[in-house]
Length: 238
Image 1 (cartoon, rainbow, N blue to C red):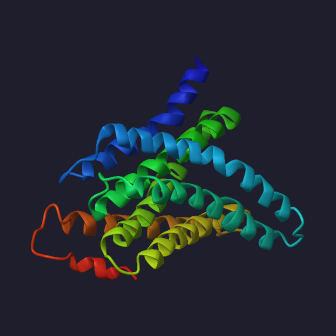
Image 2: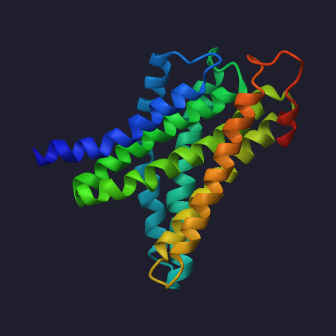
């Protein structure tokens, strides 16, 4: 019974946020089967990230300065590997799908992949650390993964539909997700220093603001909703 309850705590937050993201695409909702596939691919990306993550962790073991080691672990072993794994799925597979037909879809598919990743990761944490870990991550790690994915998806949407600087916008999508993710984790990793946890809170709030703004822009100026020409806010891209 305890195992079942633990699994519920592990999977419900990700599924709940996935349903919410599905509802924001009210101009032309994406096919449910493709969203489910995206979620499953996100879970697969978690599995793919384990080996390179462990490899980089071995390199971190050789760094004797603790703050530097935590920084390398946060930005390289965790943020870079995880965001690249998710980015590869969205950019390499879903980006080319004909259903990806407006900038907002970049956010929708990126978040589905990100939540698949976060959900399987959450199952692992809950299995090893118990329900308390699942409850904490319900309000921290799960929404954080979703917000990093929103920011990434915003620029991937621009990359596909702005028709110039496609490569630079796609790279920036990955770069910004890694920086936000790495900074958030780094402050958590050095939270043994008094007050450093406030840096993680600040990163969380900043990412929430960027994610909210990103969703608002792509919803408001969706080409499926407005027919007055090119989306002016796409110029926010590179």
